[in-house]
Amino acid sequence: MFDARLRPLIDKPLNAVARRLSGSGITPNIITGFGFVIGVLAAVALAFRLDHIALGLILLSRIMDGLDGAVARHAAPRSRHPGAKSQESDLGGYYDIVADFLFYSGIILAFAVGRPDHALMAAFLIFCFVGTGSSFLAYAIIAAKTGQNHEKQGKKSFYYLTGITEGSETIFVLVLICLYPEWFPQIAAVFGTLCLITTAGRVMQARRDFG
Image 1 (cartoon, rainbow, N blue to C red):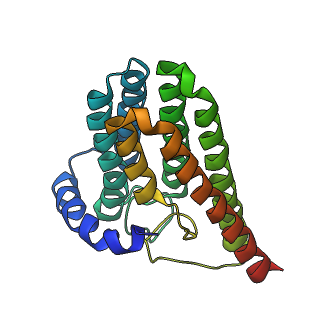
Image 2: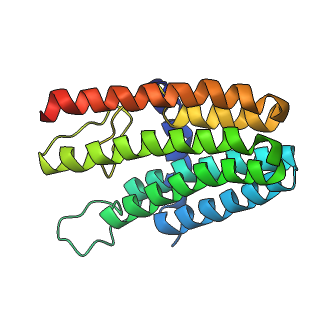
């Protein structure tokens, strides 16, 4: 919901760093992999209830998640396709989305490992993540098939469908979980419900656009 509004603020510093990294040999896929490893370390920290360490690693991981795309747009092309103007690629977009979904669900799983008394609500939240993720990706597949494009959140490797619960909101929730772990059931209940509303909205959007 807030991604489109935050994108201009986020892009400026990311693009500045990306320009400095351009030509350094650091590829977008390297940054994606590094960010994913940091995310795994964040999950491990959360499993051991090192909440503030986990918070710092989560934020660093999400910075890497934004930086890989910025570097892809600024770095010299390595594509095998003639006429390529950047390092943006379908494979890079694939790596990015897989890493994102493993990261988000992994953080919630790690929280449940560290606090088994909250496992039921963690399972509910992961279930809700599956709803938003599947509705998002399924729409993207059909949109790509029909030649649709949407760049309000910036140039993407796939069709980016908006909703109530997007990346910014999810990161905010992960921050809340680290700062106030005792409130996890309430946070999970509210955000999970919003995820289900987002899923329902995307299903209705698909019905209007593809029906």
